[in-house]
Image: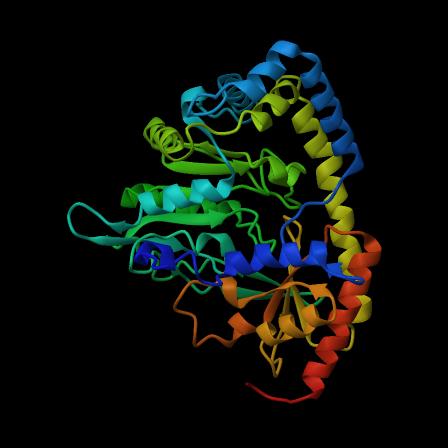
Length: 423
């Protein structure tokens, strides 16, 4: 068959494709595997019990159940859910939002595709604009959605603070950060996927001010953050204003299979998403909003995030750190300060092989992780650090995480012993 130039972008083995293919391989692999890759959340018994009860209540209501499975929703998403969520955001954070500031999508990835292409590429005046990522590495799923022929992302190298206990932290380098005409938007994830970094309130305030002065929106990917699922383990203040586009998700609550994304933004952005839903999918799914509306209205959602989800992942994080401290004590390994999400970002300074090669070796032994290179846009070829890190998902069982990290330690010893010095 002959495909168009448009189709060529879907025929490549990109970072996003690699991520999801590895998830599939891990679920069908023969023999023991350690799934420390991908972004699947943990199966938290208390959360799944609550969700089963919510499903049971929904199926007992014949009218609500019939509407959920037998009728299209509005293109902007379920109105009752949007109203309940707006009420919660006003009451909890004092944000000036209504249902008109909220839209539902079939997963955050579809939200990224529309938003990034709406604020980048070629504009009516002939200018080509990009989305600035002020703190890279960033989420691998961003980089494949651009429709413009030119790259739509520009990433900035972070400052690196070395911390006690072999930890480090990335921070935004504001020196020379000029939001000129070449940018259509700025985007950050908070907490950051892949590193677990939480951009500080001071950094967010500076980015927020710079974006407003430049007349461009600040896109905040809150898939792991606040108000839900609340996987932030350090001090952080959520914010929203009419120049901020906040993306939320139900996936990390334990619902990745229902594909429900949420956008909180100014009405003109919500109109754009509503129209895109109508054109590309007629309407978003009703299942996620129908399931969660009673939990939002009864304040159960916020309670389970605060009292179950966050403590659960803190325990998971602490266990993984203890395993690394024991299994990799003799290795030159640093861990990005794990302030949120469900990942550890490990830095193997001076590793004689790239972590892409390490990733291949680990996968052959049944350990799935993600190498660092796909988490960078173009323009980082001269930075060795880009090839010295891996992302580890610690949401699995303690035995799986312990075994997987032990195998990573063994592979690292082999890698360091095979050569020395820079690559």
